[in-house]
Image 1 (spheres, protein in one colour):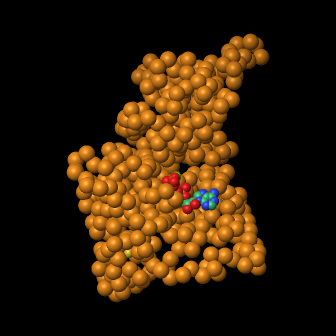
Image 2 (image 1 turned 60 degrees about the vertical axis):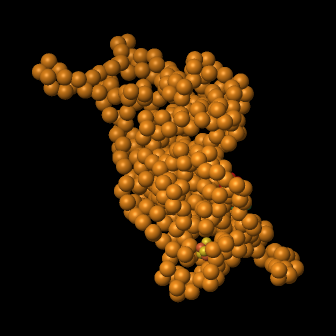
Image 3 (image 1 turned 180 degrees about the vertical axis):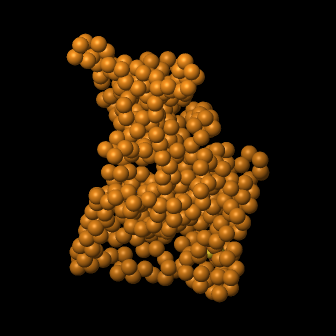
Amino acid sequence: MEKEKKSDRYISGAEARRLRRDNKREMLRLEKRKKAHIGEGQYLARMKNDQNLVEFEDLNVYFFTDGGVVKSVNGVSFDIPSGKTVGVIGESGCGKSVTALSLLQLIQAPQGQIVSGSIRFKTNDFERDDSGSPIPVYEYAPDADGKPAPVLTEKTDKRGKPVLDPDGKPLFVQKQLISEDGLPVFEMVDKTVDIAKMPVAALQKIRGRDITMIFQEPMTSLNPVFTIGWQLDEVTLLHVPGTTRKTARGHSIKMLELVGMAIPEKVCGQYPHELSGGMRQRVMIAMALACKPKLIIADEPTTALDVTIQAQILELLRNIKSQVGCGIMLITHDLGVIAEMADYVVVMYAGKVVETGTTEEIFAAALHPYTIGLQRSILSVNKKVGRLQSIAGQVPNPINMPDYCYYRDRCKSAFSACGGKPPRLCKVSDTHSVSCYLYDKAAGEAGGEA
Ligand SMILES: Nc1ncnc2c1ncn2[C@@H]1O[C@H](COP(=O)(O)OP(=O)(O)OP(=O)(O)O)[C@@H](O)[C@H]1O
Ligand code: SF4
Ligand SMILES: [Mg+2]
């Protein structure tokens, strides 16, 4: 093995100072972009395929550290079709969570920054009047002639008390339509936004409403000093204008019922530490569902749970997806979970997507040597396995990535073309893409000049 030079592993004091200075300048520039007051027109986008809910395109997310720039997400492109579950797999540190966190711009700042690329997301926002207020949808009922007439109701204040006119008579206003969930209805408008270009202030409308996240350990996401009911109510109060604490509580109870909680009224009065891990995860799912999201990101949602509870939570997620009709981005190390839950699979390696396809394509006809390696490293009840194989070697150093295929140093199928530029993701069928010179014949024969 070639002896590693000391200079390859260390940087001089002058280089470290220059690196810190350059990093600071770049971080400040990107932070400023996030806080800029820009108009909506600057981040509205158009989906490439209208069937998609999310389109990642050439996304680059870097961490500017004192040791160098960590390219955690390095040119990632894949889609999440509306209402489908997309499973994301790959070894630890390959960029799964950072990709998911980018969708909400929740990467640890200022070091972590979306440097370039697009994250197009189909959202629906409130239609607003000239003063910027959401426009309510009113209730109509047939009058004596059978024509629709506005329904009137007593005007109430924030505490639900009737508002009186100067003569002491109750004031009447047009009644706002209430949804099946018990929440006021407003006029909505479909929009496609590029999350990578959105300022954080504008993103607040999407976070927790259209895109929600279920984390691995619910105890770290729930606030230990507030009751479950209070925390659930807050989501509705924050995102649905015109909701009162009372209607929000009614909605929270419905959400807890939906996730299979017995006696939800009692759970509302409890604190997170009084619940078991499985119950806490159900609360997290109820919270994620509170505003009928379009996308749920589930980052290792069952890793902290026992196997039996895992099965219950996965079943719950599946049922909820069919009821709410949302898309799910499911991140897990467990290929069994992916096989059971996902419609499409994205395989990531060292910050890049190396293979994407339908679940059948990835499990029955995986092409990339890394995907095949991952599958050989798990037990199967259907097949007799002699010895479980691990993938030899290590992921390259993210600060100093090679300028050839990132998997080459571990790949048993490597051949002459693999020393060229890192291979591009190329289609082998309408739904199946792989980034490997074995399947990009033209580039492979040209000596890896993709
Ligand atoms: N705050 C940070 N500072 C520096 N580097 C970071 C930071 N957060 C993540 N990274 C780097 O980004 C890369 C991707 O991390 P990420 O958390 O996305 O991995 P992952 O695929 O989710 O792994 P796991 O399966 O273990 O959760 C890793 O190399 C990690 O070291
Ligand atoms: S491009 Fe070459 S080194 Fe990379 S995965 Fe394919 S065969 Fe292996
Ligand atoms: Mg992770």
